[in-house]
Image 1: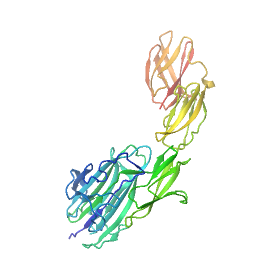
Image 2: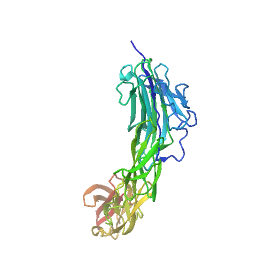
Image 3: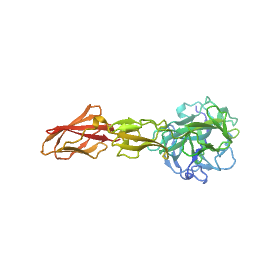
Length: 457
């Protein structure tokens, strides 16, 4: 004998920002009062199987006003979320499933996260967990479908859910969880588009229901800021009643008590804490952190010899290396390995966040071991282009037409390759060596010819 499961599930999610979008994504917050610019799916359970659908009346509907949910007595519009929210599903007994999806592009140059709100109301008939009404919240990379780590949440009807209270609405054991806030982080996803899915479903026996409410705001909370300006703006997430900004080490210094504060840019990377207090009855006090990253000095040798290599380093990860004069020295954009090309001085630059730079002068001098001539009087070994990325032409000019053996060694004399070419002909090569300096040599009737080969990243 089956019995009724009441599953009103309320969830409101709010995108919050330390750095808001330049222009609010259209209707991300439902403040047009319509369901436009969201993607909707409808289907059945269990398991949940949905397909694209228009916004169906009474299954994907906009809420407004001061009404409350009849089971959990929560507002039908998310507190602090504007004048409208989305109701996903309904309390009609069936085996329906609904999904609402919004695509959000994560900016580059920082780490961002999403703060969301939810409240849940469940009536538990003790079905097996796979047949229970439920609500799931999932963030995934829209290009690959790969779920974002630690950004998937599922709420399934059961009396043992932590943090739930007994409802007085009747109709069987009904449990609810008041408005609560959670956090999804998006490390390493700058430049990616994230699909945020909200899914509700009834039970698999068509006798019990589940539904929820969704709301989002206009931005992303920035967990890291890269700056080289004199001051930096710190902005807490939307939707809280109060904010207190503190130093994260001792919490003894207060920087401000508003959502937005401006502080002097620190001289070293510094983490700030913001203590956020929700409106009464809508969650617990929480502490969030954002880190301000500033440029740091480059470390490495100030001199490198022609044909020699060295590694430049910087304690701030994720930057890009460039050389002011690639004729004097080249440097791997991500590795920081510098290679001397010709005598002179060049400026090595390390750029973070696209705008903040650290620089260092590096002087290239002749290396004694490579100071011998690279060609004989009547013969020459030529490589072009040089430097290159592994695709090149080799030409051995000579007074006679013959076959020659070309040997390639690294700078410490270890042979890495050998091939035959015809003199006085351009020979095309495609090689896959690690970036660096190599020595091409051949023995002729007039002696030994040597040429330096530079492979770039």
